[in-house]
Image (tube, rainbow, N blue to C red):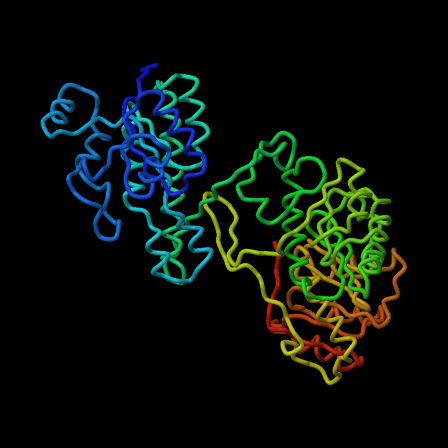
Length: 508
C-alpha cells in the first residue's frame, strides 16, 4: 500500500470555507504547515503555528503577489523522489520535504462570468497554484495533493480515518482529481482567449456530472455532464432520465422564443411540438395546446412561459405527463401537482440556450452556431401579388417558430396562434404536409384561413397546391429553390399570399 506519514504540508488556497477543520487536524497530528499571503493569515488567526514560504525561500512575495511559491525550495520539496540521491540534494540545498499540497485556484471562470474587465480576468489566471497542483500530482507516489475545495471533505476524512497516513491508492486518486482540475482550468482559459478568433480547435470542459438511470434505452449506460441546478429547481418527481433531458432541452429551446410573449404553452413528444398555443391566460393557452393533439400529449413534456395557477394545474393533473416546466407555480398549484410523486416539476430560472452547440458523430464532434434566429415582420418578404393580412402575419410568425422546432422535413399549420397540424421527420415535404393536414382533420380543425410554414424551400409547387385545396391562405418559407417562381405563380393564380424569410431552419 506504500503508506506514508504526513509530516509537512503546504497550504495556499482561495476558498477557505471548510479549511479550518483540516488545519486543526493537521496541527493535532503534529504536521508542520507552510503557507503564504491570505492563507497564512487565516491559519495564524486559528492559533495554529505556520511557517512562511518567504522564510523558506528567503524571498518576499513580489510583483503584487504574482510570485510567491515559484521557487526551487518549494518545488524541490514537492518533486523530489523519496530516494537516497534526491534526499541528499534536498539536504544539500536546505529544502524540506513536502508531503501534502493543498491548493484552491483563483476563480477564473467565475470572474469571466461576472465581468468584462480584461485586467481583472487576467489577474485570476492562477500560475503558482496550478504549478503546485501539477507538481504534487506528478509525484503522487510520495506526495498527496488536495487540488480544490471540492476535495476538502474527502481529505479531512482521510486524515481522521488513517490518522495522518496516506496510501498510494489515496494519493493516486487525489492526483487523478488534480489533473481533472488543471485540465478544466486550462480549457476555460483557452476558450476565453480563443473567443472570436479563427482557431477552430474544439475544447470543452464541464465540471459536474450525474449518473443517469440509463441511457436512451435500458441496456445503455448514460451520464449527464452539466449543471442542471443552474437552470432549474427540481420541485418534485423521480430521477431525470436521458430521454427526459433531451426533451427538456427541446422544450427550453422552443419556449425561449416565447419567454416575453403572451401566455404560451407547448406540449412536446420526442422533442417535437405536438401542441403549441398562445392565449390571453395560461389556462386558455394550456387548453388550446392540448386541443392540438390530446392523444400525443399523453406522457409528454409540458412547458409554459408564465406561472402555473391552480385552475391550470387541475386540468394538467388529469393527464399523465413526464415533466412540467414553468417559471413558477402558485403554492396551491404546486401542492396539487406534487401529490403525484413521480411527475417531474421543474421551476426554470432562465430560458437560456448556448450560442454554440455541438454533437458527437463518426469519430469526432461537429460544432456550430445555435439557431437563435427569430424572424420578425421585417424579415417577411412578400413574394406574391396578394399581401397577407395583419392576422395572417401574426400566424405566419408563430408558424415559423413552430416549424423551426420540428424535425426536418417539417411543416406547421397554424390558425389563431395555435398549431393545428404538424408534420415532421418525413422523407419528403409533401409527406410532411399530408401528415399535418391529416392530424389537423383528425382533431377537428377547420383549415380554411390557416397558414402554413415550411422549414425549407418548396422544390415544386405541389405543396402550395395541396395547401390551397385545403383552404390554407398564406404561406411562409425561406425560399432559395431554382423553382421558387413556380410556387409563387401558383399562389398568384389562386389568390394565396406567400412570404419568404431567407432563413432555412433545418433540424436533423
